[in-house]
Amino acid sequence: MADKITVCGPETEFDGIMEFKTSLVIMGKFNGTIRSGGSLQIDKTGVCTVDTMSAQDIIIAGSVTGDVHAERYLEMRSGSTVHGNVSAARLRICDNVDFEGQVTMIDTDRIPDIFSMNGEEYKESLLTAHTEHIAE
Image (cartoon, rainbow, N blue to C red; front, side, top):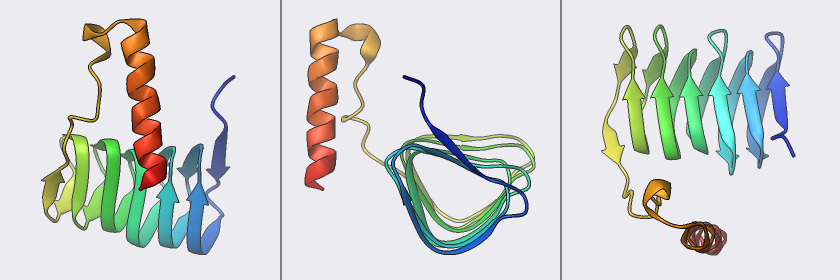
């Protein structure tokens, strides 16, 4: 089954708390808090002002003001603006990014190296990570 993607188009303006489990692309304006168990992409036309933004994977091509937390991966694409503290297990900052804030790298021990384990070990690591995430 393909991952479901929700798109908030360029004319969308939203204030409040947004929680979701799949994938979201923001092309418009958002103010508030974002919590996700899925992936989040801020398009080059997207403008977000948040107290916190957290998701498994985050790609920023637009503008974000506020703290950003990516459980697995954070990418700031060329031309993006990020003003706030960021934390991620893996981080990529491209050329021509306007970034102001502190970076905290989170513990990557929870992320399995799928190339060094067999199928059963990988399934077990996913189950363990999922169970730990629910407990949090």
